[in-house]
Image 1 (cartoon, rainbow, N blue to C red):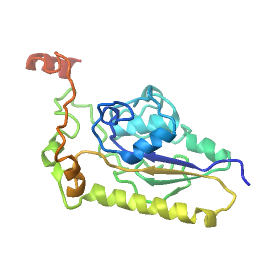
Image 2: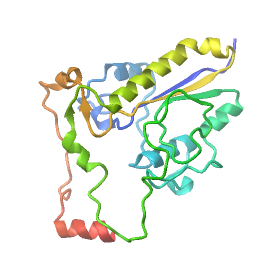
Image 3: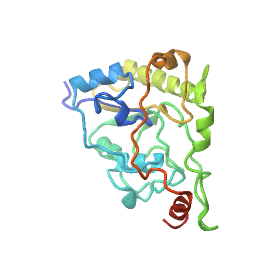
Image 4: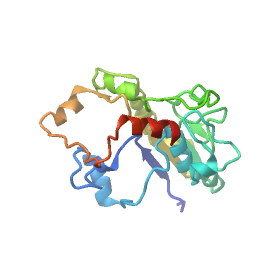
Length: 237
């Protein structure tokens, strides 16, 4: 019997702690499976994201470094291949590293220590989202603000279809893992793209909250400063 345990890491994209009852008794999200995991496991209450953007945050997760160290500053930035990830250390310990779902790696290296991808990525690996700072400071409305206009009900969308494939491939791998390399431990990262803007869902999930009075987050008194103050902050910091 091998002494090294298999490792399964399940990740959701924009799952805010304040809506989860395991972190906040006032949380209103209905997550019975996550609640069960929390009851039988360990809940980390001091964990936080090192960046509000996807690529820098994921780079920090994989490398254990701050954005100031790995230098992935935005969603069009590349994680340099010479920077080791924890998957490299797992591989050196005899693990085979497999991912099903989103990693949001930019550039030619789409593995960064993984041995195999069960699905393509959800987002482009090219540098289309790399910000051109040469024109100088410019006004930006924010990240994906325009997508809020199309949130709501849907029959399906690319995110739902993608996550269904992520789930299918991950379960398929778990069922056949013993046949693939018996005696060799595995690390399987299952990374869903939802919840993510634009926030669209099926009626069966939408209707679960039909009779729920959703509480809005409490904002500080200066949450909406004068437009001149906002403009100065945007353009001059």
